[in-house]
Amino acid sequence: MMVRGKRMGSAARRRWLGAGGLVLGVLAIAGWWQAGAWMPDRATFPVQGIEHSAGDGAVNFVALKADGADFVYLRASDGAKRRDSRFAADLAKAREAGFQVGAILRFDPCADAGPQAAQFVTTVPRDAALLPPAIELDLDEAACPAPPSEAAMASELTTLLNQVEAHAGRPAILKLSRGFEKRYRIAAMIDRNLWVSAAYLAPGYPGRPWVMWTANPRLRSPASDERLHWVVVRP
Image 1 (cartoon, rainbow, N blue to C red):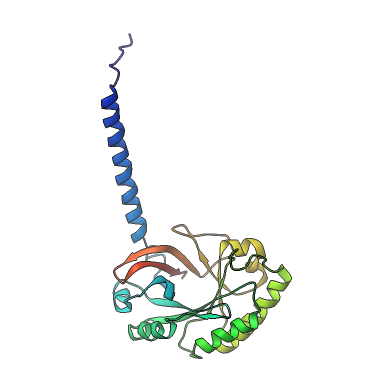
Image 2 (tube, one colour):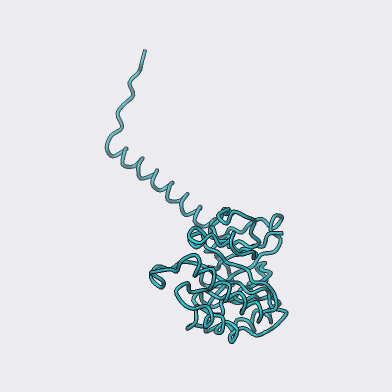
């Protein structure tokens, strides 16, 4: 025999829906908070740090060191026309705090490589103590609406790498976005260590092993009022 229960009244139904919405909201906030504080396990990735530019706000490097960071990569230049306004100051402060420091050149696919390399080498000191230079490869439709062909891209990147690596005295790391790799297949074309980006889950888009991973691009830290780009190194 089936016993028919009482139909829930409209007021009770609204209270039930409201309570359910509150629970979902609390769970969403808790998930957001945990995501903002998440770092990969130190047992798997013992060496961890940040990538940073002037646009990311100011960082207290002493507090960052206390928060567990081991290294800092600083944006030095963006294409041929822009150098990071805080690079020199942040380089000095990071070193004073005891960090190993590296420099990043953000490559403009729609501009000649020579002037971009010149901007980088006049911004970054020739210093064997610096970490290997990183070349950031990404596609920006607003800044570069008509990216070059694969052959032209390979030629410009070769020019860029030759000049940057001659200045640094060591091979560069390619900081490769998913979109750039999908279009140009750089990972198979150029034999350099790779730096990848994907929030929370390690990516496989290059098709071969990477050495660095921006694992949490929005990390909360007492070292900064703004979110940090948290990076790990594969052992």
